[in-house]
Amino acid sequence: MVRLQSGPVDVGGVALRNHLVLAAGVLGTTGASLARMLREGAGGVVTKSIGPYPKDGHPGPCVAVYEGAVMNAMGLPNPSRDFTNELGGLTGEPVVVSIFGGTPAEFAEVASWFAGQAAGFELNLSCPHAEGYGAALGADPACVEACTRAVAASGVPCWVKLTPNVTDITACGRAAERGGASAVVAVNTVKAMRISTALRRPVLGHGFGGLSGPAIFPVAVRCVYELYEACRIPVIGCGGVATADNVVEMMMAGASAVQIGSAVLDGTGIFAEIATELYADDGIPAGEIVGCAHHA
View 1 (cartoon, rainbow, N blue to C red):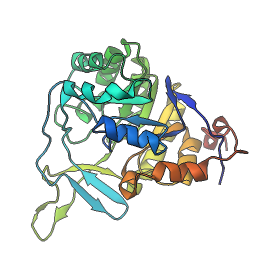
View 2: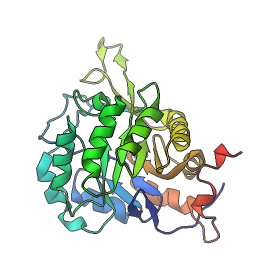
View 3: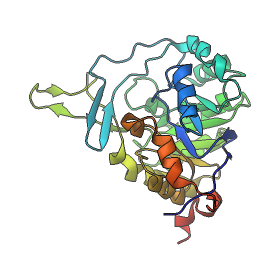
């Protein structure tokens, strides 16, 4: 397997300690959990998604774990503006705040709360199970561009997390770029559903949810590959990454960094484990492999 040089890297305007980033919604619920992930080897962390109003989320069950996959329908539960209190001890750290809203103005408002705290923003335009938010906006390139423009005006680096649940993800990626995004993140979860044959009802309380984990890795690789060709801004890969070889594959498809989410369920040491295999003193610069599959 290809091994890389270790050290800090700038991706989409955010200075990361390495190429491995904690994905939104996974152990990003408190300042303490974010700090823990940084201590355990994450090169950067993305918070849970914060919106304009407090939300309780969907009724349970909210998560179902299967072999090679996780399905969830949380419904974007969050404390809204009160979350600013969690970030007081993380000033100067590579903390990207995930935000959502129902309009460009709401996105801008939420972003304004974290001025001086966030190293960057990640716009959640991709959650598949929150009515009026997430993918409900992110499937429309015009909405993607408008919401991105509203947040990019803050001058803070702006990542846009895209949904795979569209016919053409590149249209949304180009819209984010036009709006001033400094990077796109591909992808959020795949809209999915399971039914309990014993109970004769959907497994999740909300009915359908979002699928993550190794089962969606090939989908994510395809999306990264397409966006790398369509956009000039960096692409950050996300979806099913669980090994160092997965990281290399994502980078060969075009990712400048990767996010790790569901793999954390198997242990918070996943960042250190992947880094041990991924990096070496005699490793090559990451730039030598980013997008190399396009030139093979």
